[in-house]
Structure formats: C-alpha cells, structure tokens
Length: 266
Image 1 (cartoon, rainbow, N blue to C red):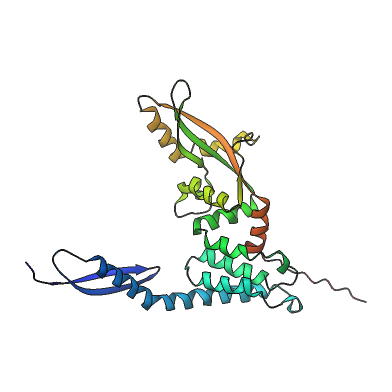
Image 2: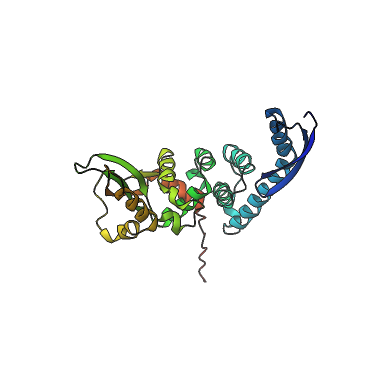
C-alpha cells in the first residue's frame, strides 16, 4: 500500500519534551525525516535550555560572590568567562553547572585568580555528572580503594572481568554506580587522578572488605566459578588518588574560599 499515515514522534531533550507530527509511508521514517526532526528540536529548545543553564550559573555565581569581600572582587579574564558561558549553556547537569559557576566565581577573586587555569573549563566539559560526583567525594577523601576481578585458571592465567571497581559510585549516588572503572579511566586520562594499583595496596585491608562483599562483585565471582576453564576468581587490590593537578583543579572548581575579616578594637 502507498497510503500515507500520520505518525506522532515524541523526542526528548533533557527535561523538555516536544511532539513532532510527520507524514511518512508504511516503511517508517527516513534518515532525512529523523535528521530534520532532531534539528527542529534543537532549534526550538536550545535557546530555552541555554537561558535556563546561564540563569542557573548566574545565581550560583552571585551566591559565591557574597562570600568574597567586595574589595577582593575583580573582573574575570576573557579566556575563562567566555568558555565557561559557552560550555555551561550546553548542559543541564546540576553538578557540572555548579563547577562552572565555582570556577567563574573563583576567577573573580583576586586571591584565587592566579590559580585558575583556562584549561580547567575544558576539563569540566569532558566530565560526566557521575564523574563530577566522584571528584567531589575525592576532594574530601583523596584516596579511594579499588579492586580488579580476574577470571583465572589453575596457573593464574586469565583475563579481567571487572577493572578498578569501587563503591564510591554507590556512596556518591552516581546514576550508574558500577561504571567506576570507566569513570576512573576518564579521570586518569584528564590527569585528575593517578592509579596506585601497580604499587602496594593500601595498608588498611579493612578498606577492601566492602568491595569484596559487594553484591555486584559477589555475583560476578559466582558467575566465574560456574565456568569451565577460567573458574577461579582473583581479586587484585589497588587504589586511585587525586593527582597534584587534580587537587588544584578541585580547589579551583569545587571550593569557594570563605574570607574571614578579623577586626580589632582599639
């Protein structure tokens, strides 16, 4: 049949939804139809998303600046404020918007501006919301224990099943808490953390018990034991820690320095 049918296609962009009506044939939407729908959604909703994101950043910056004495507030440098506003307009993630606002506010503090590297803004752009949560945690707990689970045979030959697992994803409320190995790979790629698994494990062995007893890991080990050849689970202890660069980054992008003015009576 060549008869056309009216099809309603619902597309979502962040928290916004839009319904597109398109006339398509019995064989469904063409690539051109789908592309046009995506571009239409972008044209209609991007300005609204952009405004909401920038409004959020503005409010957060204003709150941060209240903690800084007026005489210490200076104009931000263009190589910080411009990319901050550009990148912030492309995200709806509250954790990332807070980081953009914090680095912008700190760049307006005359005592902090020299420690704000323009590259920090691009690093934020390359973070997921879950990775921002992990960094926030590591800003308070710089060392995070991890375990790597391998499936091995009687000669200990085998392969990794889970790399660099940590319960930090659960502790911080990550959307995908079991992706910690993937998150740490990206954080390490960005130079924010370093992997200590090639060195000695953390001396406090009790730090690894929650990882070994985690249900996710328990299920993986049970599955390994049911295999024919590589049926011996082997756990390798390690850890990640904030790099020196990561510590400076977190100070600039996650911490507002509270200025305390001390006055003396004469």
